[in-house]
Length: 84
Length: 369
Image (cartoon, rainbow over all chains, first blue to last red; front, side, top):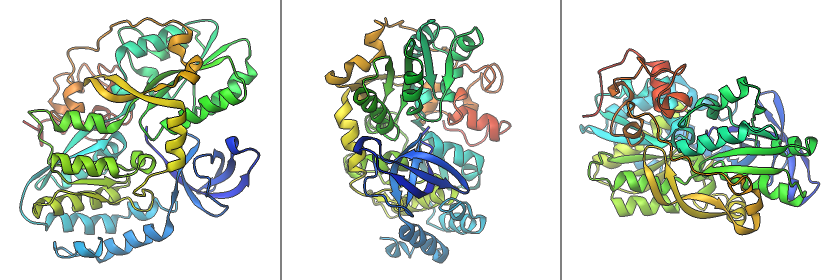
């Protein structure tokens, strides 16, 4: 139920503050998404979409940081500090 | 897809798994709260690969599973009316309350529609002014903003033939119910990342301090879950108990303030009955007075049926992490996704359905006492 999918905003329609929408691309599939809850989102940003509403921005830098941290993760308990 | 494929990478998952297995020597019981996480854990065999070190207990985070039987009976009553177009997420169609399910109402000619987004209701209501359009609004904090959005837009556009049958619930009070039970076995929690993307982390920080357990806000892909478990086990091995955020690419400490404002504008917090858990104080959302005309219960004067779910299934114990699906005598026998006894066999995110689909023969291994 709480399934949410990340997609990239490729177009914005700013008709009224209540119905801010945009075209969002999910791996080649484009859907109209309600962007009311992410007023700061711009074209090119990634948003997390749940049931037609974007509920959050997705931060590419944090995603990369996580991947880099995990790639360095060794088989010890010593490296927690890197993540903090 | 970007942000999904990287977190499904088998090499990274293997590295993370090895790191968990090398962390200390204890055996820990960790509950993942969200049904989406349960599904990912069982599908990817994370519970089995870590079985020597970690027992994963499955939490109450499946809205379909916790919607009370009486509300499902109300949905069936509404959907059976000739003047109603009843709209729902697909998972709710096969759940029974005290009697029929919504799918049999549809089979008998009822206008029951499965939606991807509740926002589609606005078009349906506009295109069918002679009909009443009712949306079955279930879900946690992740879904509350879109329900709030649709009610507010209906109000702004003056749509008078739209209402919601509201079953919205909140996660933290349910977690408190589980953690404060005398028989609680949970030693750490993987908190639901998408819920937290809306609400933020503060409430989970409070729970971590109050109950003295590690809480790791965790995403939904296999590598996310493995990292969340790694962080939880790392804390447990070191005797620590704090809130941490694994899902940083999505969850910020303060959450999504615009979404929170939307929910606050339309809903207020009330006590709510959970299927399998009973009434939990402050665990539900009801429409505020200014939006009450959009409450289907009030509009149609619905009575509570007092229906109870089947007594031969142990879904209530499964939802609290006290039993695993294969412990149930009905599992994969008289209870299957085709003919479910309990809601957790119906929803694709229910723990029973996940076990049935991915490890049906895993009957008597790794069960809780």
